[in-house]
Image (cartoon, rainbow, N blue to C red; front, side):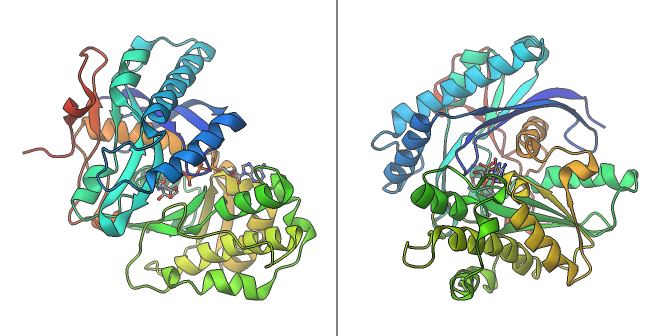
Length: 391
Ligand SMILES: Nc1ncnc2c1ncn2[C@@H]1O[C@H](COP(=O)(O)OP(=O)(O)OP(=O)(O)O)[C@@H](O)[C@H]1O
Ligand SMILES: CC(=O)N[C@H]1[C@@H]2OC[C@@H](O2)[C@@H](O)[C@@H]1O[C@H](C)C(=O)O
């Protein structure tokens, strides 16, 4: 067992809805003591700036480039993260000196694993200066350098949670953690602790884009719009017959890999209903590549709050005798799990432990990762220490 560290994790996910913050005490291995968590939503104007950032990022060929609005956006995004940290500390009566490290995800603006290119904007040095706390950031890059998909990174944290659950005999193995964010990903944890993970398909991002375009709302709250519609089989088949699901190699996804339907494909409600089904069916279909059929599915991320997705997933899992549970049913937190994971990964990075494995991202060998920005030294961004490689 290593020393227990107090870490904060910060996640701004592909849904671009805000910043999730969570506190953990952990050794980066099996000891995980979950603390408070909170979400700080972006306003509509900032969300629009992030969307513009995704457009501007399309021309990037070298990951340090910041064309168009991206340089200013990176600075403002980082300052918003600093404000979120300071609010979180205040709300929980904590001081910067109580925190050993922050794991900072930043915002993915471009992800092209086939080209070995992944870009998360977020300035670790600026965040260290603003918060007066050490930062570990840019945790996907080293995985890609070593042939990995750069995602998902959360599996090693899922495995630690599964270890805790199995000690309490809370679940039947094998268990699969399913994160339904903008994109969905899953982590299989076998009875022997083996982990296998990959992105499983579009999560909420198609539904969000559909209801925003046709109803002017950012997401289908409570799955209300979908609940009034009917599945359009041809539309569902079009998504589910995408080569992503049948390819030999599991590939990580960019937000733009699946495009929303056109207005001619369906009406508002039928479109939302079909896309909710596609989200559930994509997870089930991708689970077909796992080493064994899951006995338990643990659902995390915003998609678990859409009852239409949950109903479809429960029915599909049932056909293979799998049981679907929300994270909350196991006394976990489905909203803060990614932020918790980034806190956990930061501690692993500090300890030089692997963040990814051949069976989680396709990386050549287990590798650590992340860049370190010290609150004590005023380093330039490109001089940050890389924790990825230890001689
Ligand atoms: N009450 C709700 N009802 C229905 N859907 C919801 C609800 N709350 C959140 N969501 C969905 O969850 C999404 C946010 O999920 P989450 O915060 O897990 O995504 P993320 O962290 O941005 O994504 P990723 O895991 O891809 O990085 C929202 O965009 C919305 O589609
Ligand atoms: C490149 C990138 O940001 N990928 C995200 C995205 O959102 C969900 C899915 O696609 C996952 O692969 C990943 O995030 C999670 C938290 C991860 O890396 O574990």
